[in-house]
Image (cartoon, rainbow, N blue to C red; front, top):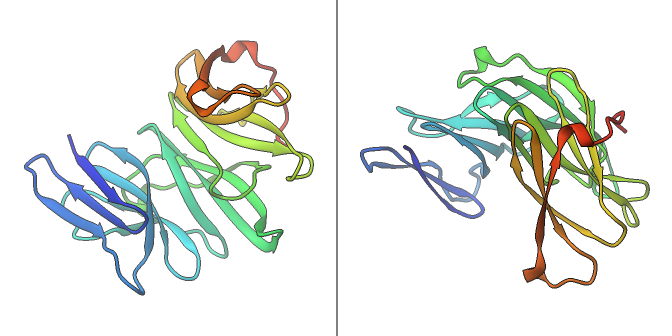
Length: 220
């Protein structure tokens, strides 16, 4: 098993099974700013700010540093999530509107550790506050926290995408409830973190919901 340590926000250290440590994203002025997106076996998948623009990078056995994995032209590619079979990420482009790119999309590909194995395809547009919106993936399903309407008074939605078909079951939070990260994406159900209205932080709960119980809605 590969160990992983991060000194947020810019240093990523990969530790192999023998205990040998490699700084694959070092700290330093002028170097890429990295965040850890996923760990698959002995590979670390990262978002890297290559200045300007973001790309998906990876580091595995034999890599002395990170190397590019996904870098589509004229856009930011970041926040990759994978279950080791399929991979999804945020694809953002266009002028900034209220501090966020005017176009943010979900793209997908079979998971691969080399750029030659990446087969990018469009899945859906996303209605989110920005490319750093909470997201997760498991058992072939991709979860993202979306918002509807005006971003200042929006309704929160847990959207669960099937990257292959684009099908989108959605959970709408009760009025006043504050959304938290999805904590589990199983084969038949999702666990969604919720902070009920009026509760303190230590009263967070997880709601287990079967996919079949959620309405399938079109993407925004």
